[in-house]
Image (cartoon, rainbow, N blue to C red; front, top):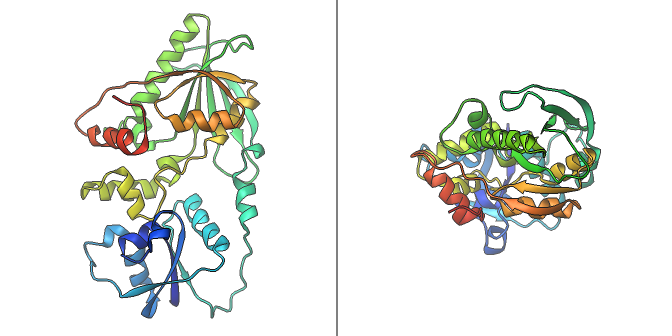
Length: 313
């Protein structure tokens, strides 16, 4: 397969020295490029995947093409992120295949938190609390199922302590030391069990948004880049992906479906407070969550603090 042009993100184009200053300011903006010869699959992979940069450092020359109407290009990059693949497309104007129409509004409807509903709810004894209850949330278009674990007796008179936790297979399940996700989840569960013992209750909102919304495969690609010396933010940007792509409004709608309008939020991330408040969730207190460090996640936590604005010491 060959194509005359290729669509990549501005962050990836910046790595290839192709983005102008305006494009580089919006890392997930689309950039169309062309070269002296058509792109084949091997060249396209070398351009799209930064893990191949050391193996094929000499690429190009390429030049960026103007995008008078970038709506569909932006939609394409968002579809790639939702699919958990690298945000890169070969553009072949000569193809004879019938196109599949996807508009920006279709993507917005797919992502709309209002489409969520509670699909199931039942008692779930856990090691942290035997009287826990779990609710599963589903939307018609999205196969990912989000969960809420409720520890203690839910009461309309009590503002629960809430943890918005994004899925992390490596940390939550396999005990990865590269992040603090597993310890944060464990600490939240035991903190909520203590809340229940004191007459309150806690809720873990478990969002199926692996890798801060970029997917498991892309998260592991970012890990490969971190092994080369890049921090979390730079690794994501070299992949052409946002550093933060989670959909926190989903958490706000989950709370609304559970009948919880007021909360105390267990977090170090100010962005979660803003996102929930925009969903008309009243936050009466932010409770910090400190799980310490280990030799493998010191730089990760420092990047959270220094580049992503997390409130860490």
